[in-house]
Amino acid sequence: MKLSEDGSSTAKPDQPSSARAPRKKVSPTTPEPVDVPMSALPRQVVVHKRTFVQGRPAGYSVAGAGMPVVLLHGWALGDHTYREVISKIASLGCRVIAPAMPGFGGTHDLPKEQFSMAGYGRWVADLLTALEVDEPVVLVGHSFGGGVAIRFAHDHPKLVRSLVLVNSVGGSSWRKGQVVRSIAERPLWDWGLHFPSDVWPFRQATRVLPVLIEDFVPNLFRNPRAIARVANLARRADLRTELEDLRKRSLPITILWGSRDGIIPRESFEALCVAAGVEGTVVDGSHSWLLADPQQFGEVITNNVSVAKLAREMEQVTPAKKHRPLRRVKSLIDRAANAVTGSDSDSDSDSDSDSDGGEPGSADT
Image (cartoon, rainbow, N blue to C red; front, side, top):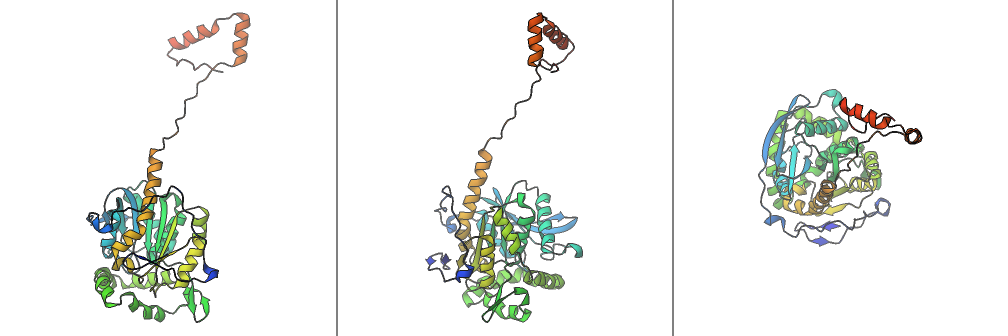
């Protein structure tokens, strides 16, 4: 499936047969996307807050009310960059929580011994505990945030309702000439060479650059060491095994990718799709297409949100099974013996029990 920037459908580009994943089955109960256009939905106010996670200060943005959605940002960015995206998701009837992950946006770094994808996943779990989120969330991860989202969903399955990956790291595949190699072999200069394509053409640059600069420049001056460390962690991430495990657990997974993304190559996107066992969605855009057009992003994930909300509503209306308390009764042998002897000890013992304050029907068997 391929979407143009105005949301219209175009022909799907050819994919190598070896990387083509099976189509994802759609349940008959899957609701149709909301007919109301995103532009007609009321804009939700996004509020930035502070809290403590693992005893260290952390920042996050929140908007809306309803089903919890967690949005994890990309490399070197923060929650401010995604303000419009947060508002669009919240307008679908969700409570959106978008943290500034450790090392960015004023959130304290992870300790050295915890610096890993698993460590970032544990931090997100502790954030939800600090914010008293008591139900599974819809987890959305962009770029580096997608890698954290995969590991978080893998390590904390009870906390995730569904997973949405947007131009995510973790596929660990890169084409050099005619050979597909591990993306860890991709030199840093090649990453930098493709970065300018993420903000051009000019029409897109006027949308993307202002929001990127809002977080990137402060992070660069505030914590340049974290930017370098996380860049190295992201480019070496191989999370295909974790995705295969999530597929076996039947976790709903959606994978989105921009057709002009030079940062996450197509081979990496396809590797993620194969590991997850889903057919990815290709959008006409660059690595940060959701920042360039938040409205289009909201329209793309509307169906994901609708399915998750339906599942949540079904869980809430299903009554919990009530367990009847056990009663202690006299055995059939004792009853038969009393019937033969004509003994009325039952009534006497019951009377004594009642007079002593014992509960009726609590005689020993």
